[in-house]
Amino acid sequence: MTTAPDYSLETAAQARGHHRIIGVDEVGRGPWAGPVTAAAVWLDPNQIPAGLNDSKKLSAARRDALADLLQGCAVVSVAHATVAEIDALNILRASHLAMCRAVAGLPFTPDLALVDGNRLPADLPCAGECVVKGDARSLSIAAASIVAKVARDRIMVDLAQQHPGYGWEANAGYGTKLHQSGLRDFGVTPHHRRSFKPIHKILYQGKTVSD
Image 1: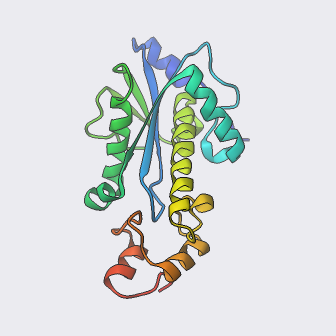
Image 2 (image 1 turned 90 degrees about the vertical axis):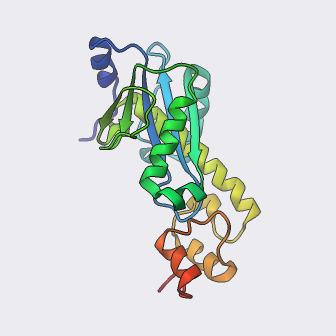
């Protein structure tokens, strides 16, 4: 039996003296193209939208609706790390950079950030607590996962209009068959992550994406 995220981690943190508690999550570590995107969200406990959950467990339409609701009833900050930063830093450090930027973009300094995963960003501008599988446990992290996913998907839809043939409007830059065939047919774009193995092979070893 699966359980939905709840507000118990936030309530426990409040009992320890924290007041402004946010959820932080990122999306886009695995794709071959596009930025990595993070969101930081503070939920008003009196205005939590029904149906918040791990973004992966929701339909695209439900994610879009919830992301729009959150913009009106929560405090939301979204930030990115670019493809150039991913290639220069590595994807983990770039993900942490995006998280730090998202937290820094809030209009206040939180007392505590509940961060999805098992490693805290080194430069987080407030106290932090790792929450493994946090998007399935904490409503604040679930909200951040939804906001980040929707924001990044919309970026990839826009990029797909500029670079048709890779299927980014549907695959969000992940290595699907359509994306692979697009690389074979049209080559590498400025939005591809050159440090990722399939792209690196094409650029520096003269091999196809399927090798």
